[in-house]
Image (cartoon, rainbow, N blue to C red; front, side):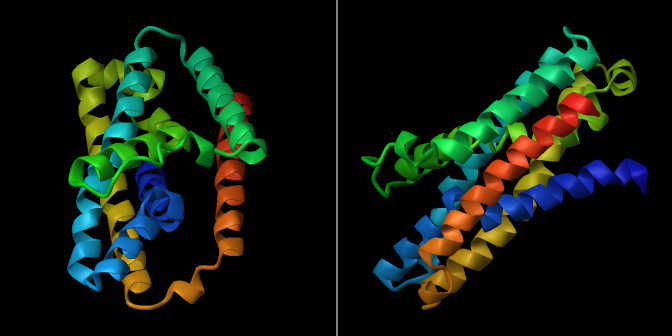
Length: 209
C-alpha cells in the first residue's frame, strides 16, 4: 500500500481541484445554464481540462527535470518554499485579479483561461509532494532515469486529470440543472481559503519532512 499512496494522493488532489470552482466547473455550469443545455456545459469541460492539464504537466516536467540537476533535499526545500510562498500569496492577496477577464467563451479562450487559472492558483505546484516519491527521489531517479521519470510523471498527470474531470463534470452538470443556490459566494470564499492553506501546508511538509 505505501507505494500506492502517491497515486491515491494524485487522485485525491484531482478531486480537490475539481471541487474548486476556480478550476472551471462554475464557468462550465454557467455556460450550460445560459444556453439551457447540459451538452454545452460538458463541451466546455474539454478546453478547461486541456488548459488545466497543460499547466500541471508544465510544472511536473520542470520539477522532474530539475530533480536530475539538484540534490533531493535542496529540491524539496525549493519546491516547499515555492508552495509556501504561493500559498501565503493566495491567502493574503488572492489570485482573481490575475485572471484575464477579457477571454471569451470560445474553445481556445476557455483553454487559455483554464491554463492561466490553474497556473495562478499553483495547481501544478500542489502535485509536487506526490511526485517526489514517484520520480523525484534519489532512488526513483536512479532506477527510472530521465525518460522513465517523465513517463511516470505523464501517468501521474493522467490519473490526476481523470479524477479532476469527473468531479468538475459532476458539479458543472449539477449547477447547470438549477442547483446554483447550493454554491453561494461564502462557500466559494471558504474553498479559496482552504486551497491556500493546502498549498502552504504542502510547502511546510516538504521543507521539514
